[in-house]
Length: 147
Image 1 (cartoon, one colour):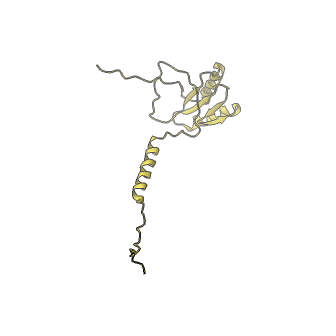
Image 2 (spheres, helix red, strand yellow):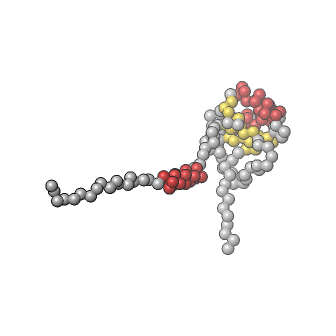
Image 3 (cartoon, one colour):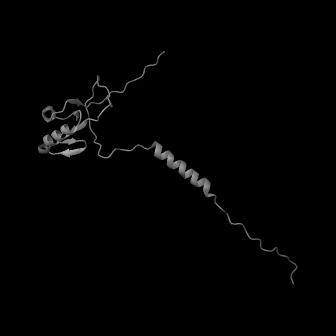
């Protein structure tokens, strides 16, 4: 026989991965991305509005005005829904009758024709809207240091 003595095979411990810390890191990453992401509203249009040096942000109190968008090609959308020219007057009348204080915010692109803007303004007034606001790019207000 042999003079070698072998150690008995000791069972090796299996390596274990602690999932608790991995799940914590996953949740932290999820919360980080949820808080830092910007979401685009569905149906939002990219408009090039004219700029104004005297414009101020709209007053958000009360009922939200009906938004009429006039594109450079003359197409019109009301509250994000494209409208044909033949449907525009009837839709505006319906909205004016349903609102407590009917107001319109007209967002016309800066390259829209003046004649198209006047046509839409006439339709808005004929529909019975009490107030019409024209959308512009609001300049950023810089805070001066009080030094």
